[in-house]
Length: 337
Image (cartoon, rainbow, N blue to C red):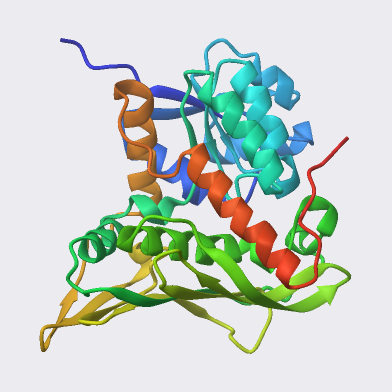
């Protein structure tokens, strides 16, 4: 039987994340090929295409979506545009790999999830870490009961972004630390909590540190799951926690800690203490983005599992909205233009 042709992907937006998140992994596999790009500025798209050897440049996003030679699109646009262009891609019959956060808010996420459900197309939120063997193993350890009854989860993603003109600080683009870094912290907490017992968490409290009106540069939140275990999420783009990327789970019989769960290819450690013993587990340095691309292609071509489907995205966005409410801030809004 002949090999299947590569999945042909177009990119909506000449974003900084695109080379690491998609272009480099695609060059390393015969199963996917990036063949087209469109950007708001067509000259920027042309420069990006020349630099990264992308064959076709479309004059605008709608033109790329109408390209009959494309199977799927990768969407790394500003947060406020994710929902709008995912809906447009689905209407054009394209599979979607959408950067996180999935949408500007939970209501928009529900709208996109409903469209995805009836489309027969794959829609995957790009929480790449979730596809790496490191985090799969952490979920497996918790679900197997090695830690006993889970009591406490803590997740953090803090990094310095002192360029305050960055789009990630702009409310009108659905920016803020909770959206950019905090979506990881919330998603990790939810995923680890659900591995222990079914049921989505409620937000007990949240505290923000602001950069400008309604724009958070740091956020802490306390969550509680229906089974009783609690979680703390921390995130920042500018705070005293300059760099903190971690996750931990404490149970009544043991504890699990992960150093750098988000991008383990750059160094990681998974430590388990249980039954009077301590062990460290390490995993290959293959990029989490490469594992994600493998999963996306497998989902499109063979119906493989999607660990970050729209229903999961709706739940994450609901927690993020609730964190903003608890912190006395408005939920983010979608671009209405």
